[in-house]
Amino acid sequence: MLALVLYALSTCDDQHAGFDPYLFPCSPLPAVNVKDRKSHRHWQEVIGFTFRFLDSPIYPGPRQYRIKGTLFASRGLIGRGTMVYRVASLEDNLKEDAVEDEALKICWPHRNRKLEGDTLECLRKRLPAQWHDHIPEVTYSATATAEDLRLPRVELLKLSAIKDFERKDRQLHILVMKIYKKLWEAGSVEEFMEIYLDCVECHHASYTKGRVLHRDLSENNLMFKTASDGPKKGILNDWDLASEVEDDNEIRVSNANHRTGTLPFMARDLLVNDPPLHLYRHDLESFFYILIWAALHYDFAAGTKISSDQVSITRTWNDDVFRRNRSAKNDFLKERKRLDEVIASARKGCEPLIPWITSIWRLFFIAERAEPIDGYDNEVAVEWDNVTLGGHLTFETFMKALGRKPRDDLEPLIRTSEISIHTH
Image 1 (cartoon, rainbow, N blue to C red):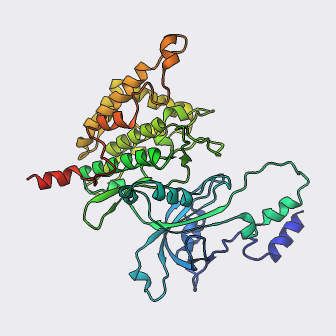
Image 2 (image 1 turned 135 degrees about the vertical axis):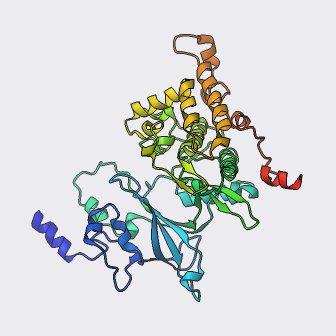
Image 3 (image 1 turned 90 degrees about the vertical axis):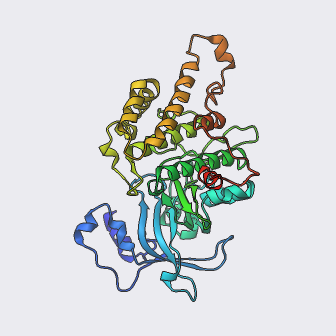
């Protein structure tokens, strides 16, 4: 068997050896330090390489992109294998430095999941035009199956003696979009607050009018852009784990066989071995954790954030032992002294976030106390609305806790800062 494997490796072409058929090296190849090959940053070797893609149903014409850097790299052996690169489009008659950089995302979702590009296209069709500025702008999208790529496993599975083997095959999904900035680069805490509000309201509009629930809110998925007319606009990014909302407002069951979310920002209900259906209020809980995370980690004046290891209060929120993670978040939402610790540890310049944090904490605290206990309050339990925890955790109550009135879809988005300018 070993001899057969060695022979196959010596005779196969690059594609069957596992190299990306769309990726072409630059000439000459960049020099790479031997030590770098042993580090987790080996993917930097592709800087200067070119991606060449063919036509797609929505975006005609061949596309070429030069890799300028790595924005994100998945390190897991199991999963979608997501890679995000900073690229420059090699358009005809345009110099590379004259083209605005974009983000090229490559991932391998299950074939039975709705693609992120399709989700974004649906949102643009369903949402009122004012919300289009708050979801990613896609410039290219394409998909390729294992059969399209002639991956070795396609032929190997045909030779398998096991015929009833159930496999969840994956497909390659390519998405090119505008590059957006991170929350900690907002410039000031006041601008961060407006960006945050944009994302909360866009999320709700996507849920109620776009019929899509995001399900993976994190500090890296709330972003912003600077509009041509001046103000920064919040962008709700990374929709590849989103779920459709049915006509009866039920969340369509995901095909994923694991919980969705990013550990520090995951709702407590989902941090169990057999997680329940992901609800809208779970995303509200994630929004709350993002707000706390910002107050403890961000330096808006410098446009930086400190490492999560430097903040002891929320260190356990990143624990992959779900029992400990859930317990730490439970303690925070049930004990006033935990809130006081967060308030006392807020970074300089983040003081304006404290009233929001206090008000939302009270919202969750009251909701927890109102929930009927198993075996008691049976009459209350019969009528109890678990989706909103008895009506306590809704978009309306969340916005009220922030002291803001939801902006009407038919009205232009007017910021508090803009109102003050016009009234003075």
